[in-house]
Length: 360
Image (tube, rainbow, N blue to C red):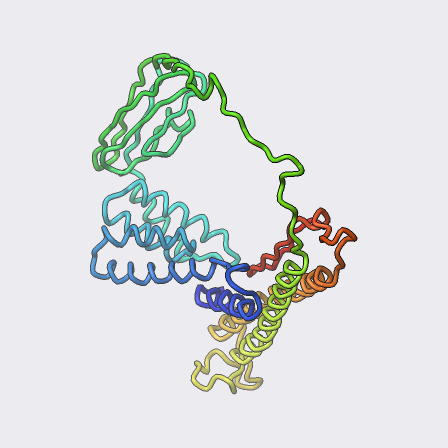
């Protein structure tokens, strides 16, 4: 599904739930993340067109973190290469090639692009080799805030040109800190770690010598439990109704999108399309044509909407039933609700479905 359709689907689901659920009880940050990612991506593309790569790269990185899209990853890799961050660009092109191969429809254009850049970047990557004079139990190497295990030390850690901070730490030892500066192209530098000195033992603190007493409520001092079953029931029921409404919306989207997919493969419904895509006798599109591809892509979206509707409607019905049960449930003879029977209830809808959590 395209990014725009994904944002539309999320917005419709959240809007339907907002009609019945007050406040932010069922807030879903997915739509905000996708919208923010798209905004950063579009602004970064403007900077790339102006060849202003330094400010564009962080914007693309944040956009990819919020919404991992292949187009964003490709632009980020190119941006890193333009500013001379060979190792970062190499890693991103490797990732681009992997995800482009893994999709249902492999992106051959992106695979080819990634492989061309990987071959060009590989001989330019600099590496840092960590040399330990002796085996240090539990030793950890951190380079620029990222931890690396022993196989990376001897093989060499790929780094961008520039200065890098290195910290070697081990249990019971004082950490060793240093920095190394790598040149622009294909340099391998060794960092020799000296024997780590033992860590100095600190004197026990006053809190350890005489722990502070912890006050605890006795059973008679604890505040009485509140009767929140009816409130919980209204919230859960409203959430269930909202989820059912969202499921209905996705059902409508399924029907309309599927119809649109069928229309894309009809010559009568596409007067402006290329006549070479359609059979002049039946008026249907040829398999493998542009119209056929567009029709299949639209039908894929319809199937996605149908899957969401098939999950949301039954889950919403269950949540509505639970809410009604909690609202109608009678209090215990003591005059308070049996709070031990229901500790918590939470309904969490999402694009992939919804979940109800609670203890009854």
